[in-house]
Amino acid sequence: MAETAVPGAPRGANAATRLAARIELTKLAHELDLGLDEVAFLADADPDELRRFRTDVAEQLFARHADRFARIAHLSSLVPVAIAARAAQHAVGPLVSARIAGSLPPAEAVRLAQRLPAEFLAEVCLTLDPDRVRGIVADLDVALVTQIGRLLLERGEHVVLGRFVSVVPTESALAVVDGADPGDLLRAALFADDRTVLPALVDGLGDDVLVAVVEHAHATDAHLDALTLVTSLDPAERVRVVALVAGLPPDRAAGFLAAVAEIDAWRELLPALAHLDDRALAALVNVPATADPAVLDAVLHTAHALDLAAPLRRVLHALDDEHLAALRGAPGLADPAVRAWLEQHDDGTDRLADLLQGP
Amino acid sequence: MSRPVLAAMARRLDLPVERLALLEAYDDADLTVLDDAISLAIRAEDRAVADGLEQAVRFVPRPLRGRARALVFGSGRG
Image (tube, rainbow over the protein chains, first blue to last red):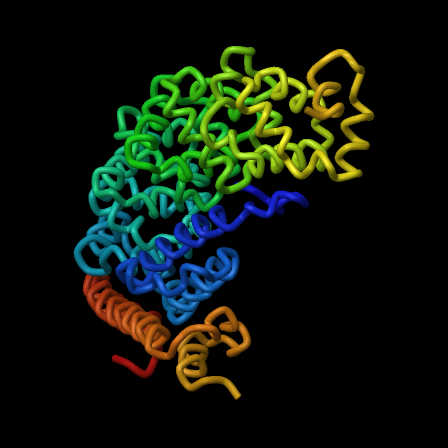
């Protein structure tokens, strides 16, 4: 997601912030069992503050009975594990089992979980705080974790899956989404609480799966969702996905680039563009969204702010006449700081020199 | 002075009201829906915990049940 908008690129973070707020509101609604429409009044709130509020609510729900959870965890050690498993399933129930789980010694919790049906454990996951059971999940049988994940996926529990994505082993996460609907895949990734794990997951997905996700985003007008994930990837995976987009029919690239322009994600995209071959680069940069001088101005300012002369030079060479004319209308070309930077990289032999000389 | 709906929510969440500054810009009607949902979630949690623990004690072998009950509910309940 776009970080701080660069100077001269004020179109920036509004759409990205709205999307981040929508993701947080979905999680808050899930926590409080509300409809999304009932928390929609918070749509313009700061996403980080929404996240803190949601965390406060979850913490308070847990803290009210934390001492009892610790005591019942101790109680479970007084009975054989088979009885504790029956009690969890038939008496304690999934909500309280979820609260107690984090208070159990991990080895005991693992033994208990292995005796419970995946359906019950999936119910437990709905209210389980993954951070409290990180050590337990790591030691669970991969097949059981996969089975639980698939049950949650079948039920459309994308928020829950997103919470667990940083806790479950990559092998299990990939097994859960193997053969999944691309829309489910996109939503589960979008709700990931910790996006730093996404590059490893995307690395394990085949090109056909990533293409299916992009196609789904195009068909459902969810380019912003897809782009949000692309910006969470590491540079290598970002280049891979962007190259796949460039290879699709032109309207897919057009939708993707329109989303990039909308949330001003040039900071993330421009370095990736430099790794594309000429044909792929031309396919991506010559779309309707980039025929707008204001959009190309944002590209220019981003390149300047991040000192990305080489990627900018490649983009310049890939632009067709219509887009080159639009770039000539970019206000940034008259900005002394930008101009000085461009002149610094002008060797007089390419389009950069032409651009600096004017029409 | 903080608005009553925010003060009530802060008490419910056991937070200083300043921690809810995020919500100050919104209407009482919207915040009341939010506060009601929090209240419901807390009541559901309390009920689930009370019922679940009461039932759980029944799974403890009879000779240990009194000790288990004292452990879970405190020595005041028998």
